[in-house]
Length: 275
Figure 1 (tube, helix red, strand yellow):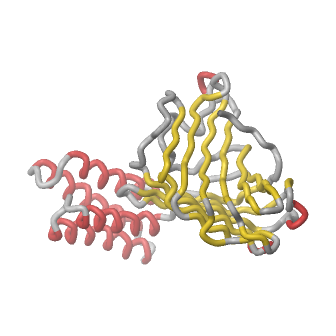
Figure 2 (cartoon, one colour):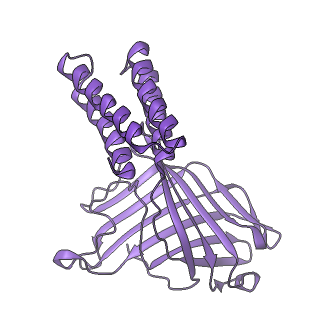
Figure 3 (tube, rainbow, N blue to C red):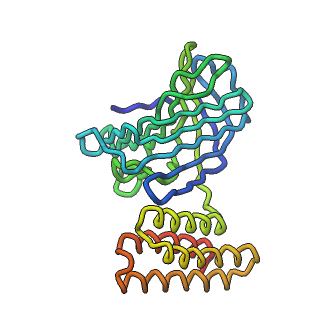
């Protein structure tokens, strides 16, 4: 299946990804509406603010046997579309993620997030369905789109010039198109993410509480140094974190997969700090 519905356009100012590191990941976008189309398009005007956020469950099973396509029922944990100027605050619980990698003769990447709203209305009419779609028809290296590189559920910001939200009511369907640019998380946010990762690993039984406390203290030291504007000390604490993770793996206190997750979080923080 493929779709291309060039209707409502909006330019997004930013996209922020906030990984949960266990099985879920959340991606959020902020922007402004530039045009609209569909049953209730008259409600929209250029310049209206819009935010889109979704959380996905990365371990959801793919029920589509077709190579390059994915259908993940339950892969969507939450979807929220907010356009305050028109009173839209669509909130979807569990839903479906659908992916198409190099479809339509190999020249299209597509990802859809959809479900039944638990709350929200448009023009006084209850929303019956809400969806956000991202489509990439631009050829990258090798002549194929690069928005996604497999049919798996994506956890990174989907940057494309053809993406839109779709709102369904009894009046019909309204389309809200947007362009997204990804913003880098701040070092402080990444340090907090690292602390959350450590706690998740403790909760999952992959780290003992004492190990978790020791690693958390390193991230806490990094965060304190960031708050103080002391990058050198922050990088030093991050180096100590790396050393401790390496020592834990060498002594077989943690497995390779756990060590890799911890290093990934620390590396992202180090890149943001310029260590």
